Length: 175
Image 1 (cartoon, one colour):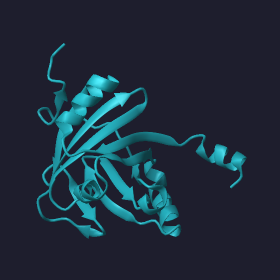
Image 2: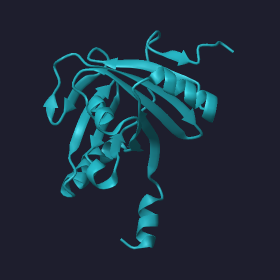
Image 3: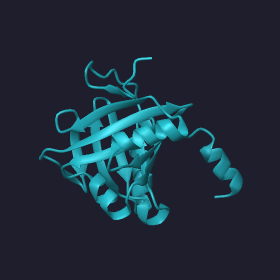
Image 4: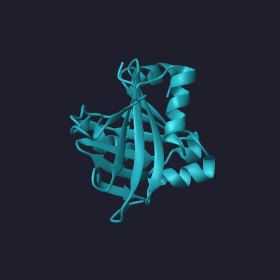
């Protein structure tokens, strides 16, 4: 593609989120608050009861799994922290292999463009590492790490009305 074609192609794309993996989400959130002034954080436990259709490496996961996810907004960008707890997800393997740090960048994909976007990646030899649903939110982690040094996530990014009691806020103060 020419520079002009790239600029036109990227003009309306929505980079929605970037994510870091951590082994200690409480310590990481506190560092982001203290050093970067990023917060507050919405903290949720994602597990086999709150997510559906989790698939890793093309295989549907039927055993228990859990991860802790924290999200904070800075401007239009969502920052996500993920701490793996247990189970067959790609998070712990990534943490063991690379340590804490940048895990993925997420692009918002319109529902009507989903299949074509996934096919475009597949046509380039890029498969899906993991996919799953959290209410109406679907994610697909594309296997871009070998070529881009991080994972590219596709997501529909809907606003979700999360049931009361499912989210806690960090820091814990009420001001």
